[in-house]
Length: 96
Image 1 (tube, rainbow, N blue to C red):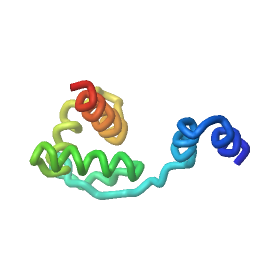
Image 2 (tube, rainbow, N blue to C red):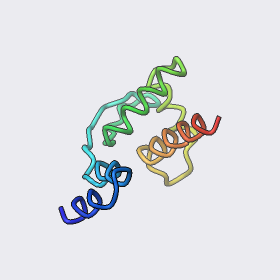
Image 3 (cartoon, rainbow, N blue to C red):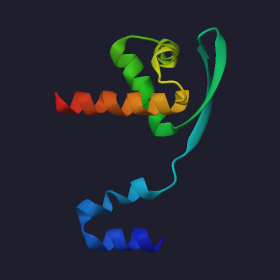
Image 4 (cartoon, rainbow, N blue to C red):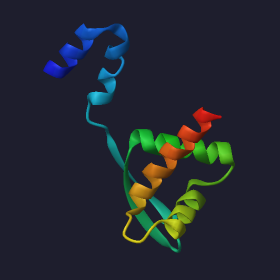
């Protein structure tokens, strides 16, 4: 609460960051991946980003997740691979 008040008192532009300070809502979904059902717990913003990537690329979310599952580094959780992919996808889109 003190952090939010401090941020709001700093400047209007900085106060926009205040919404990012709150704990993210985590949602579970079951996605078919490589012949099994993977239960993934991701932040709503990550799910929304993955849904948007799916729409833009014209590919089902399950296909994207299967590809990420097949290409992720050993020991990297699938949820982490998805977060990294979504972030990288939109960073690249902004850079263009």
